[in-house]
Length: 222
Image (tube, rainbow, N blue to C red; front, side, top):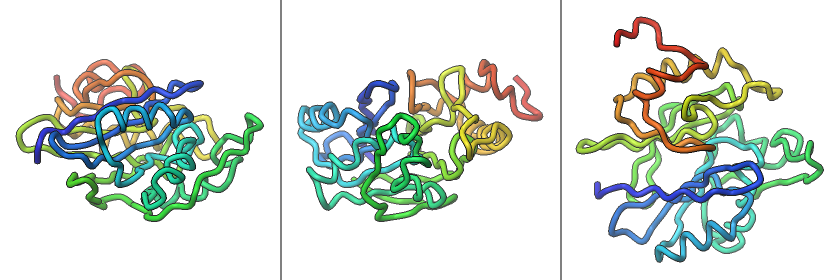
């Protein structure tokens, strides 16, 4: 696989990271978690002469799906991909948390549902799916593995730089989140680059060593 490029687009008011993912030399890209300022996403795509081929969603909270309508209006054939248990959030403002802000945001329906262990391919890139509940009941992360360089983990709102996603929502659970991080994310190679839903990138090794919320995994030896 050619070098992987991930471009971040910051959307306000929640500081959410949308990622545009593509291989160097390719014009096809994947958009992960289109945020609430879709015009910024359009500008980033056009400035790089790219053509989106899919929308991947780590979960269904409104700040991560807010650009779906605009994306589908511009590119009607784009499939929307989301974890099975978070699919209901696309059509329910209460579940996706927009109702609490008086917005009542919804998304076009999902075209494909994914679950633990699935591998999906778009733009010539294999995205490995891991089920990581705790912030949201149906949260998934996408992993792009490499044989010659670091892996890339698109982590949504599970793992941040020296922080974690909130677990105080109705379907949240700190225990589930901690388990997902310890059992599924921390076993990845230490140089795996983590692309979080909010804030700057980090690495798995940095979070094992310094994340103050989940602690080191059982049996970890420095």
